[in-house]
Length: 260
Image (cartoon, rainbow, N blue to C red; front, side):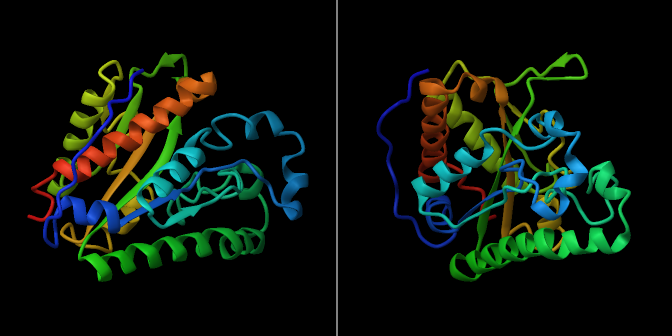
């Protein structure tokens, strides 16, 4: 994998992709770890293998989120509690908000988990997203995730997925620009849109879309195939650099329709 060097940045006026990308960017990572806080550890005594799997967290998502935040000096919100304790990327009331062991606990336990972990995370993310809109007129919210290479016996046919809502033109244009930039930076990568999941499905980006106008909010979930993360070492380091560079090119040179 070869990272292409050099990029140009244009100092365009307010509502340009460059302006929003470098200063109106917010990075989040909902599934950054598989930590179970002590008060609930007994509920997961027999589930360590599950915690260590893709069911427990998104391997590589946290390091990718940190790389993006560092490269663009963007605000970052991350969580390392396992999605099996409470899935920060699900809406309250979603059947998979909690793992079965938590779901079977008394309601006050679930409410305590929401209060201590879910609500503060959502509140922090919302504060940063809304502040970016106040400061720059529009925000690009990138949510960092990864996906298992094989699920239910079916091999996932992509290296990177860009998830968005097809009904929001700004998100469509942004993801098309980013996909094109990834093709330039790393032609060997297979990049698919709204794969392996539908971008308009339940999640933090969908939660924001219900609250914020398309002109104000562009939300994209970045999904990376965990086969690249499993290889670790130089390969994973170089892939993170490729993704950062492709985003830099996207923000500097493309997405002229995002403000329309």
